[in-house]
Structures are given as structure tokens and as C-alpha cells.
Amino acid sequence: MPFISYKLTAASAILLTSLLAVIYPLKIRAKPAHHTLLELGDAFASGIFLGAALFHMLPEAITVFGSQLGHIHYPLAEAFCAAGFLVLLFLERLAEDGCPDHPATHSLSLMLASILIIHALVEGMALGVNTHTATTSILFLAILAHKGSESFALAVILNRSRLTVPMLILVAVVFAGMTPAGIGIGTVLTENVTGQKGQLIAAGFNAFAAGTFLYMSTLHHINHHYHHHEGENLRELWCRVV
Image: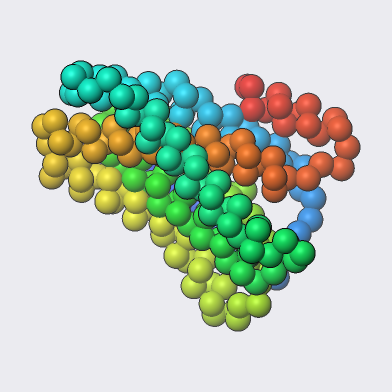
């Protein structure tokens, strides 16, 4: 029960952070701008995501699949991880290829917003299915650190669209609620599906989420962050390594 309370607290903190970070830019109809501190903070959070994916989530998934399905020699954890990476890559390339001459069109904005919403749900489920305090805490800190810049990015994307203000607010609220909803779904699965099946489900979510974390902190970060001078690349790299 205390562990479930911890997850509920984490879900509440993430929901509040998301709402605060996304509503204000939408309220003032903020336009894309360069925010050095936001970029550096996002790079730092991306580094946490990389560490969580490579040093915790994926290795744990590999261990579980190896112990529970030792007779299967196919790299299942790595396959789930690659699937998570490729799903987001496919969706983003699909949006960009659909509007090659108008990168800031209405449909592209909605597709990019959908990618962020899907990622928010997956990261919440990854936190929810985890039963180890250390991994859960690392994921919580990574999500919380990344949520502000991710919410602001969503606000900028939505401001490029032709949605009405009520629809903008609706999408923002849905995005804010996706990670807490994912935490709830993951927690329910963990509590109700036990034994080998529960371990395999948790391992699969961990591996898939690791792939989405890898994509969001590498290709997505590179494609959607622009620098005014070369020195900012070095500062962002340092923030990731730290």
C-alpha cells in the first residue's frame, strides 16, 4: 500500500506540473521562441531518460525474459525496445512526409501532438508497472524533469494549428492526464496480474518504453531543438552526460 501511495503522489505531481507548464503558453498563445534554460533543462532530462532506458529498464527486461523464457533464444527485450523506437519514428516521419512543403501545417501539428500524447501514456505505464523503488524513483524524476519542457513544446505545436481555444485546452488537458492514466493502468496490471504473466507484461512495457525514451531523447530532441550558436550544442551535451 505505501508503494501505491507513492505512485499516486507521483501521478499527482506529474499532472500538476503538466497543467502548469502547458496552460500558460496556450493562454498567451505563445509562439516558437528560443529559450536557452529550457533547452538545457530538456537536455538534462533527456540524459536521465537515456540512463533510465539503458541502465535500468532495458537490462531489467532482458533479465526477466531470460529467466522466464530461457528456452527462447530470440532477443525479445531488444525487439520490444526497437519497436518502441520505430513506432514513434514512423509516426513522426509519416507526419513530415505528408506535409513536405509546409512543416508547420495543421495536420503535422496534430500528429506531433499525438506523438507526445502516446509517449506520455507509455512513460506513465512504464512507471506504473515497476515494482522496484529505485527504478520507479528514477523514472519519476526523469518524467517530472522532462514534463515542463515537453508540455511547453506541446503548447508551441498546438499554437501552430488552427484549433479553437476550447480544443487547444482539451488537447492540453488530455496530454496532462495521459501519464497519470498510464501510471494507474500500469499499477492495476501489476496488482492484478501476478506470477510469470505479470513479470512478462512488466518486462515488455519496460522494454517498449525504453525504446520510446531513446527516441525522444535522441532523434526527436535533435530534430526539434534549434541552436543559435555552436556553443549551445556543447552545453546540451554536458547536461546529458551529467
